[in-house]
Amino acid sequence: MVYKSKTLAIQLKKDLVSMLNRANASHTGGCLSCLDIVSVLYQKILRIKPNKPKSANRDRFILSKGHTGAIIFAVLANKGFFPKSWLDTFCDNEGKLPGHIDSHKVPGVEFSTGSLGHGLSVGTGMAMSLKYRNVKSNVFVLLSDGEMNTGTVWEATMFASHHKLNNLIAIVDKNKLQSFGRTKDIVNLDPLSRKWKSFGWKVYEVDGHNHKQLNEVFLKAKKSKTRPVIVICNTIKGKGLKNMEDKLISHYRPPTDEEVKQIVGEVR
Ligand SMILES: Cc1ncc(C[n+]2csc(CCOP(=O)(O)OP(=O)(O)O)c2C)c(N)n1
Image (cartoon, rainbow, N blue to C red; front, side):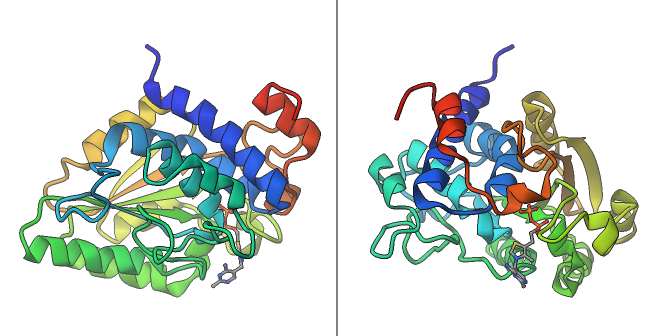
C-alpha cells in the first residue's frame, strides 16, 4: 500500500534541503529525523484547515523542538497555509519565516518555541482548557529526546496524567543525538518507555520512519479513554542524507549544493 504521506515526505525533503542550503542554516539532522512523523501527522491525522487556521475545533500541534521550524514551515506551505514562495525567504532578515518557529508571523503555527523544554507544558494547558470547554480536539506535542533533560518536561508529564488528559498526545523524536553528543552519554533517558509508564501515561514505541506504523499508532492514540499518550519514535538524525545519518555534524551543517542536486534531482 502506498501512503500519500510518503509522497508528501518526498516533497518535504526536497523543500527542506533547498531551504537550509539557501539560508546556510543548521538543524538539518533534527528536521530530517522528524520528517516522516510530520508527514503522517499533516497528511493523515491532524484535523486542521488552511483556510481556517484558528477554527475552534481544530487539532493543536506544537513543535516543542522549535529549532527545527523549517520542517513545519515546509509542511504548512505544502498544505496551503501560505504561499510556497515564502520558503525562499527562510531565515532572511526581512523574510516571512524566521529561523525558529513563530506563531506571531506564520499562519498555522500554534505556539512559538525555541527555548527547549516548554512545549509539553503549553500543550498540557491547552489540552486541559479544551476538556473544560468540552471541545473534542487533540493536542499533539512533538519533543526531541535531548529536551527531556529539562525538568519542566517531567512536571508536565505528572500534571497531565494526574488530570487524565486523554486528549494529549506527546511524540518523541528519539534520534539519540543532541548538540554535543549522544543523549545516552549526556544524560541517559533510558529506559524511556518505563519512565513514562511509571508517570501514568499510555506508551507506544514505533519506528519513526515507518508511515504505516506511525499512522496506526496515532489513530490508536486518539482513542485513549483515560490517559495521556506518548509515542516514542525511534529515528535517525539526518535520515536520508548519507553523510549525515546518525552523525553529530548533522546538527550544524546545512545540506551542500551537491546534496541538494541529488535530492531535488535537477541542476540548480
Ligand atoms: C533551553 C535551551 N537550551 C539550549 C538550547 C540550544 N539548543 C538548540 S538545539 C539543542 C539540542 C538538540 O538536541 P535535541 O534536543 O535532541 O534535538 P534534535 O536532535 O531533535 O535536533 C540545544 C541544546 C535551546 N534551544 N534551548
